Image (cartoon, rainbow, N blue to C red; front, side, top):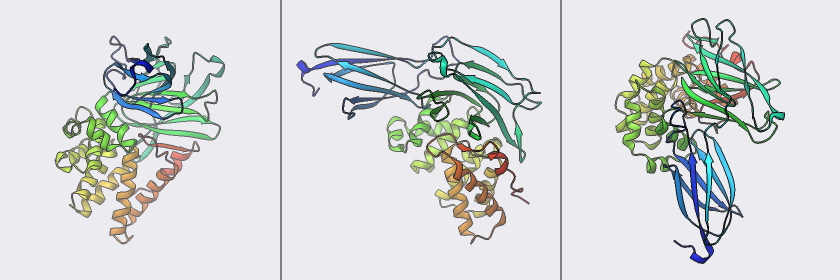
Length: 384
């Protein structure tokens, strides 16, 4: 090591993730990104941690250690390294709070309240109204309706949900202001805040049960596909896409990764199947359209049909899909000399998504007034 032995000490990082007896926890085996910053905030170490323990030597001094997992949860601690001493820090990224209760929401009451609290600072507990929406058969609907009886495991600021399709959760974070988050069928959603003002410091993290897909999505969202290629073999992305019947959301992430790295030979005909078999997922047609575009197979009628299918299914689950949908529609509209009514109307709708989207988030997130979704979907049928 480069450190002088007499002026350095050792640091051990221990990370406690989901408890083994709680298989519903989504944090087990998730890769952790570690950053160690010096007192002047220079980065001393930055690496991915795949086990639950790391140890090495550092020069004596004060450091800020940050731990981030791919669902966007982040924890940090300040430590001091003493010469020739061992220092150990523990991160516990389980939800340590003990308040747990199963809620069943009546189909007759689709609008409901979920309380997100911070037990360490009860003075600032706030209640957030959550309304779930479903875009289905060309209509915006409240979810659940009379077909659904969802149950949630609420762990203070965390909700774990299992459903059969994606939906949109509307969080009323302030008077006249809502955050609309596109959510996959199975996910863990956690809300946290940096200060007492939850209205301006709300942080949303969304975890998937598929850890490989979660980490690929995180790296792509960070614009770090090169790092993703270092951590994952291309065959892993190919496998994600191949296993679309078991995990269509993971398959979509694998498809976006292969598109971003240009490794089209590993996509095979699977994006076509993903688009055909999962009609609730707008991202399937987007991936298939872009597979044809990037492979120079410019079958304009099929590409056009796929992009219109994506818009007719609602909002793409992923921000990467939203970006590619916008670029694809723009490309086709220009190719057709701006002379296609359906493509023009679809592009107008997607521009409304783009104008209200938080492009820093991996899952499509729109911010606006509570009537934002209704205004977007008031536009006429794209195929008429």
